[in-house]
Structures are given as C-alpha cells and as structure tokens.
Amino acid sequence: MRLALLLFTLLLFSGCSTRTAKSTSTHSYKSTYSANTHKEQIDYNDLDKLYPYHNKWHQTPYKYGGFGSDGIDCSAFVQRAYYDLFGMKIPRTTKLQVKAGKQVPRSSIKTSDLVFFKTGYNSRHVGIYLQHGDFIHASSSQGIIISNINDPYWKKRYWMTRRYK
Image (cartoon, rainbow, N blue to C red; front, side, top):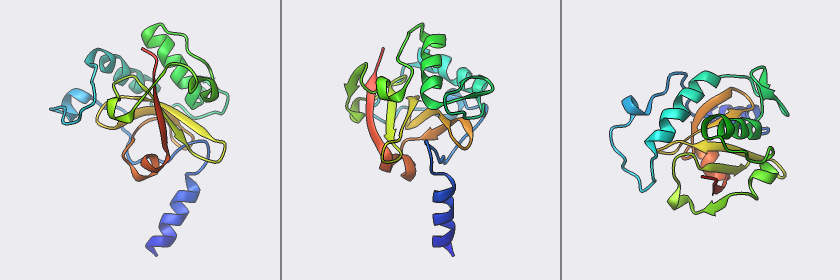
C-alpha cells in the first residue's frame, strides 16, 4: 500500500519541476533558525529581501512562459526576483541562466545563489537559495513556494549552483 501511494505521489508531481516537502506563506528565518550549523554563507541582508518577496508571491500559480502575478515559471520568477531585489538583469530561461554567472560547488553555497535541478531528460528547474537547504522557486503544482534541497526529490535531482552576485 505504501509503495502504491509513493508511486502515485511521484507521478502526480512530475513535470517541469516540483514536489515539495514544505511550504509556508509567512516563513521567517529569524524565528525558525537560531544558529548557522552549516558551512554555507548566509547573507542576512539578502534574506531580509528574499523572505518578504516569497511572501508577496507565495502560491502565485505556475504558468509555463508566464511572467506575472497571474502565473509565472521558474526561470521568469528568478529573473524577476533578481531584477526587483538586486537591480540585476539575468537571462530569461534556465538554459541561458545555467550558462551565465559563476559555477560554485555545493559546499560553498550561499544565500541568493541559483540552484539548478535536472527534473527530466530535457527538463531543468531553477530556484534561489535561502539558507539551511531552503530555496524559493516556482513549483509546477503549488506555485511560488519554499522547498528544501535535501528533500529526497530535490537531493536526487540537484545539478549545480551558480552565483550571479
């Protein structure tokens, strides 16, 4: 029975991107995390921008090719967030985003880095790293949410990290 439920869940959430273990509309790093126990670099100035941005966009529906509040895809969300929050223009598609910036090892990940995943044979997904494994992204099933890179679904599909700032 558990295997059937697991298979059904995996099939239900396959696609451009996403299955998630956690999402919250009022996520706050200040109340959730008291200490940095990882080697990651946390930029609290960026977190002060990223969490409210998540709250503003939370559960905005996913729409392939979309760029606005009526629906947005993962690469457009990342592009828009970087422009709105950091005044930076980055490429529109994951195919171009993964070629720009500087590749960094996962062990050197920091707040605001872009995390990329291979979600299918030719499918790619992108999100913005927050801290403690959390990243913000446009889920094809739940819209704009926060997920964790260490969730088994994401951990298996992690591809690379790129730094733009």
